[in-house]
Length: 301
Image (cartoon, rainbow, N blue to C red; front, side, top):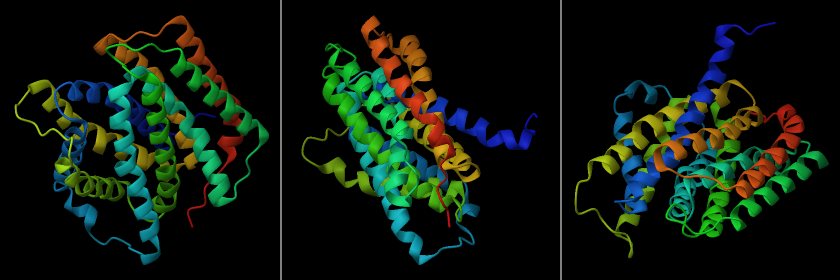
């Protein structure tokens, strides 16, 4: 039987979110060519926060519960705060295409996190798939040579892996919260928390404040703060609110596909034969684990 159009909306939103998130790596690379990574991330959060002013209805009649504060706090600490610190540093050292490939391990991390936090079943097949994916990611990193796109891919890919650990914590908390709060409210909460978190970092030693206006990097920041932060997170948060988080996170596997195409077209990045093989190993590990993951559900009570 074919699904009704209304049932397809969450899936369409998730695919759109993945396209936007894949473009993040390219936009960040373009912005980092001129501006300090922490300046770019703060600008992104600021733009998203300002966009929230256009949606005042989101903050009316919020069904707030004090016991949800801990989940909100963990969510925003994981993402955007720590996540963007790791990702910003990662993209300084590795290529956009390799960083996109590392994102394929997030669904497996969510399954492992759900086992530890929600006591969900975790099979040996899932663990085996996770180990294969990690092996492929490590092989991808070790087989990469320094280039203008990635001067230190091993370090960069490790930092992107840490970003995925944070993203997994975010996804687990998000599923708990979307049962009660709207996806837009949670998206704006992330933006506000990110702006507050990254503002003092601008004045840390080593952070270079902008001294000139360069159109393309500036437009990249506007794009990241509006289309990506609001569009991608809004679509993803809505998708998670409609289907199990473990199924929604499986869409993350589309990011490296879109990233490979975009990074080749816009940045001119290319993989070697060995890197394609290593990337295939990552996909094999993810595919092996998808059966058990697809049946896991996170309680939102």
